[in-house]
Amino acid sequence: MNTHFILRATMIAALYISITYALAPISYGPLQFRLSEALTVLPILYPEAIYGLFIGTLIANIFGGLGVWDIFGGSLATLIAAWLTYRFRSTIWAYVSPIIVNAFIVGGYLSILYAMPFWFTILSIGFSEAIIVFAIGYPLILVLKKYKL
Image 1 (cartoon, rainbow, N blue to C red):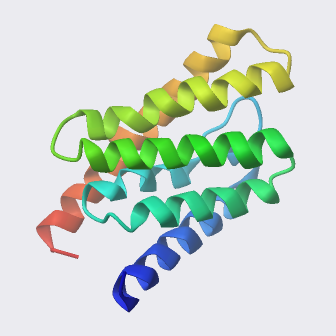
Image 2 (cartoon, helix red, strand yellow; image 1 turned 180 degrees about the vertical axis):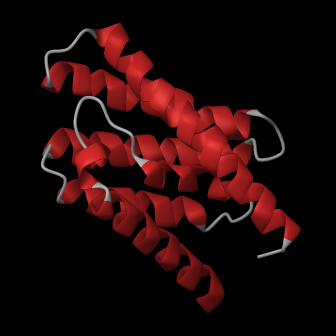
């Protein structure tokens, strides 16, 4: 780890937190559309994004109001998804990993916390995650690759 690595991880964490808080009404709850999840594809290009996303999610969820479930469950989901994204970075699974992981882990505990039907919550989280990953995250990766940022 060098200064550049730590700085980029910190910037990713700060971006995740800022976007999540700026859009708090749609970032938290049983039906969410967390635009900061577009950053979950960054491990495709930057391994340090794994740390930045984990820390960003952890901090965003500490102040998100869902308590221990979201702090630990959401942060763990992000850590797993980020590692899988990095691991499968040259395949479509890099984009699919955060969708599946968040759908089942986050959707699972949200269905319990809000007493909502399990499969409805899983599909809702998965659908919103898929829209964000493919509509924002994928183009973000293309731009970063093109300009070698």
